Structure formats: C-alpha cells, structure tokens
Amino acid sequence: MTVPDTTSVLTGDQLIGTRDVPGAGEEFHAVDPRTGERLDPVYRFGVAADVERAATLAWDAFGTYRNTDQETRAAFLEGIADRIDALGAELIGRVTAETGIPEGRVTGELARTTNQLRLFARVVRDGGWLGARVDPAVPGRVPLPRPDLRQRRIPLGPVAVFAASNFPLAFSVAGGDTASALAAGAPVVVKAHPAHPGTSELVGRAIRAAVAAHGLPEGTFSLLHGGRELGVALVTDPRIRAVGFTGSRQGGLALVAAAAARPVPIPVYAEMSSVNPVFLLPGALRERAEELGRAYVASLSTGTGQLCTSPGLVFAMEGDGLDAFVESATAALAGTAAAPMLSAGIRQAYDEGVRRLAGTDAVTEVARGGDDTTIACAGRAALFVTDGDAFLADRSLQDEVFGAASIVVRVRDHAQLLEIAQAVEGQLTATVHATPEDHARAAELLPLLELIAGRVIFNGWPTGVEVGHAVVHGGPFPATSAPATTSVGTRAIERFLRPVSYQDAPAELLPAELRDGNPLGIWRRVDGELGRD
Ligand code: NAP
Image 1 (cartoon, rainbow, N blue to C red):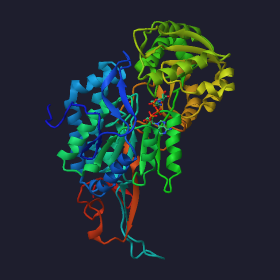
Image 2: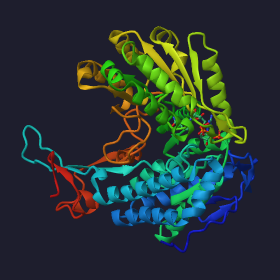
Image 3: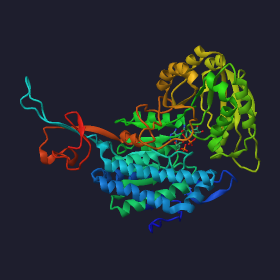
Image 4: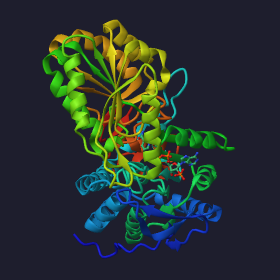
C-alpha cells in the first residue's frame, strides 16, 4: 500500500507540532554499530524552549483530542500504522543501519509495531476501556436515598514517552507506550533514543502526517531529540501528566525521582531491569537436559541478549541431568557467533558486566561465544556457573548484565530452590521447566514466582512477548516502577486513564458513554451487572 504523505527524507530536525525545528544543543550522529560508520544527517539536541513549545502544544491539543469520538481515534491509530507500513524497506534499512539488528528481525518488529497500533484501534472502538458504570438513583431507599452515580475513565493528560534503544520500532516512537497513550486520548511528546534518531524521525513524520490527515490538533504528537537535561525538563514540565519509559534502572529511577519532586508529582511507568530466572525441576532435567541446554542458549543469544526478557539466571537442582545440561549449554554457547550490539555504550556496559562476573570468586566462566573483530560493536555471549550458597550470599549476582551473559546456579535441593525463589527481586518473567512428576514441586514454587514476576512461563523460554489482551509485561521493582500495570498488551491503556464519578448530573451534561439508553452501545456495568443496555 502507498500512502502519499509519507516521506523517507531525513532532515535531522525535531518535529514539534507541524514545525520542523532544528535543535540548538549538542550535535550528534547515528552510528552503524556493525561498521562504526557515522550516518547522516547531523542531529542536535533540543533545548528548554523546544520542551516548552511541545508541552504547550500538547496541552492545547488535549481538550480536543481527548474528546475525539471512538471512530476518529481508532482510524487515526490505523492511519499511523498504514503510514509506517508504507515506509517499508526504507525504514527497515535505516533501523538495520542504526542498530545492527538483522533485517529479518526488524521486519518482524515492524509488523508487531503496526499490528499493535491496529490492536489499540480495536480497543478504542470496543469502548470497554471507558470503564462505564451506572448506579441509578434509588430515591426511596431508607434510611437515606441513593444518589445517581455514574463513572467513566478519562485520560490523565499529555504523556512523555522515552523511547527504548533495543526495540527501535515496537518500544520507540510509535511503540506500545505511544499507542496506548494515544488510544487513551492523551497527546504524546516523545524523547527519541539518541542511538536511532533517523528511525525516530521517519516514524515521527509518519505519525505527524496521520495527525494532519485525520484533522487532529497539531500538538497531538511531537518528537524531541536530547540528552538527560532535556529528558528531565520534559518530565518536570507542568503540562506533562504521565511518563512511559523503557531502559536502564538508573535512568528509570532518575525520572521517577524527577517526577516525584515536582510540585505536582506524576506517575512514571518505567520498565527497567529484569534477569528473568528460569527454574529447571528434576524431572525436566532428567528427561531433556541436552535439549534444554541448547534451547537456553538459543533464547539467551536472541537479539545478542539485548532483550528485556533475556534469561540471565538459570536455577537447576543437583541430580540426574544437571551436568548434561551444563555441558550442552557450554557447547552451544561456545558455538555462537559474535553479533553487533546496539551501540558502543551498551557494548561497553556489557563488557564491564562480564568482567565483573568473571572476576567474582564464587563464579566460574565456562564458555565464551566467538569473537569477530570486523564488527565495530561485537557482542560475545558468556556463560557462568555458581552454586546456590554463593548466589544467596551475593546480591550483585542478580544485577542485569544487558547482553548475552547468563549464570547457571547449581541448587542443592528443593528447599534451597524455594529459598532462592524468595530471595530473587522483581522480574518481568519467571520460567519453570517441569514434567508431570515435578508438578508437586512446581505447585510449591508457583505461589512464590507469582509474587516476583509479571508473567510465569511453563516449559518455554522468556524471550518472545505476545501482544494481546492477556499478556503482562511488567512486574515488581526493579522490573518496573509501577507493578500494577503492563507496558505491553491492551491493558497498557489503563496506565494513562483515571476514573471520574458524576453524581446526580443533569442528563444533558453527561458524556455519551454514561447516558441512559447507552447511545454508544458499549459494555457497561449498570447496578453492577455487565451488559450493553
Ligand atoms: P538508558 O541509558 O536508561 O536510556 C534510556 C533513555 O533514558 C535515553 O533517552 C536516555 O537519555 C534517558 N536517560 C537515561 N538516564 C537518564 C537520566 N539520569 N536522566 C534523564 N534521562 C535519562 O537505556 P539504554 O540507552 O536503552 O540502554 C542502556 C542500558 O539500559 C542497558 O545497558 C540496559 O542495562 C538497560 N536496558 C534495559 C532494558 C529492559 O527492558 N530491561 C531495555 C533497554 C535497555 P540519554 O541517552 O541522553 O542518557
């Protein structure tokens, strides 16, 4: 499909409402992590005036955009998806050049991104997100009459989105945070990730074209480039009312602190660090140790380990199959080829993390993946082994090493496994490998795992996140700063909404979704009963 108003021309500008605004701050380039080559055009960080302008426009747009009808908003989301799809090979080529992610994976991520936008369009049309409830008045109730109370959800206000480095499409400018905020009726100001500015500009221009084509106010979307100063200025701007972030624990916590220190604090939905523990129970180890070893390394090396769901810790009980599992994983990992990491900074942080583990007395390095000196930012997988006592004694072994490094922990017995499950900090995922003979042990483990993780996986691997209605991509700190939510899937819209009640409101002042006769035909709870009346 061709949508005429898309463009693949890059100018290096920020997109503030309808204007192309060159940054007046520090100059930077995208760099191809495969070759180290600088990519055109030159970009520059924005300054305080750019944040001010984008936030003002977003606030001005809020009144109109939040009151768009469901069909207009859904068609807008679909319009963004169509325009991003229309960029096709141009966009895929730019993502590959800026991130080193292979074309096949980028193609899949592009489809996931536009499917996600279309999924949110369906969510908007469905209207369930409005959370409409009607408790009709009971004038004759004794001892006191009951008032007429009606409830719906409205958007919090303009949302600041911090794009992630590792999913340059699906968690970036038009990723899950942006899609769910726009679906909720919130204008969005994105701070692009500095590692992929060209990708950000292409996608940003597609969103801006959709804003214009659907007759929406210009401040519905803006895209800024910048460093930490600009990020903090955005989070502390009084017109910004919520923040979506994916990245490091340190970065997420800095933004949580900045938001909490505002005169009017706001929520920050930060997805940060997770090492995604995997628990191998004795029956599974006995039945399929070698296969588990190979599958573990395949999951670990996906995306050069730069996935928030990468399996960084494996807990396996001493007994039949454990040695075979370690041998199989060691051989598989030693056979992995080096691959480009996303940026020089991320590669450097990875190398430091691997050095720290290798230098830890109770930890043994058992394998390294191949090297490739022709790749500028080559990432080499690394496998370590320790035991349960050492793991319990050293909390730093739980720290995320972002990349394809992982530790196998040899656990003495079931009691130690349960102790470990209680000592592990908050995670996006926890995985259990079990055969039917393990189910009694798994039944003891599961209540502990659901306390630490947003998603519990059986007999699979944590990498690969479905975008749907039942998925949770969230979890207790430090996986996220807001454990009651998810950043992937249709529930993500709830982060940017809040409920409002209307008591004894005159009929003509009520929003359509709360009027008698249900003119929008949406699902509502009337006197507690769910229906479409
Ligand atoms: P990052 O350093 O946290 O940066 C993410 C965004 O937040 C960037 O726009 C960054 O701007 C901004 N930022 C970071 N610290 C900030 C601060 N103190 N104040 C204001 N803004 C701040 O993450 P990254 O660049 O994507 O990757 C670095 C590390 O993040 C990785 O090594 C990994 O540990 C982690 N990571 C985790 C996940 C996950 O899902 N768990 C995903 C991606 C990355 P600047 O670039 O200007 O600093």
